[in-house]
Image (tube, rainbow, N blue to C red; front, top):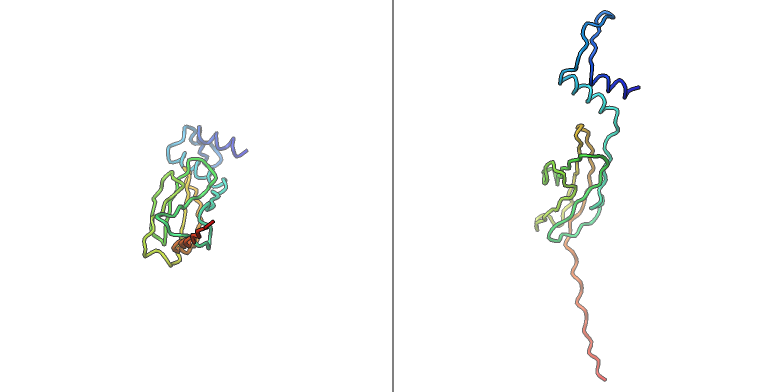
Length: 147
């Protein structure tokens, strides 16, 4: 029933006053937007999850840290923030490479990923991570064998 009313409202607007039709005609652009906004309210919000990094994880600082999210929906745009600063503004890229500096290491950082669609619906996910130096591999002891 909602779909039929929605389609009818996009093609024809009826204005009633005192139970009588006083106007019938095509909708104005602002009326179409209002109808779309109403329809968007009935759609579920966007689901978003971190692929990397995981919440409360220890992240090794190499030259860059890969931040990736997965979200449901079409025509999505992504925004990434680290410690409240926008690192990637709205873009179709669902992956951001964080180029860490020495001053970032040894601290807990809040990573926030936001996603939105063309209807203006949004989803947000956040993760706290602790950035550390990657441990060095211990040297392999060479043994010589004499036969």
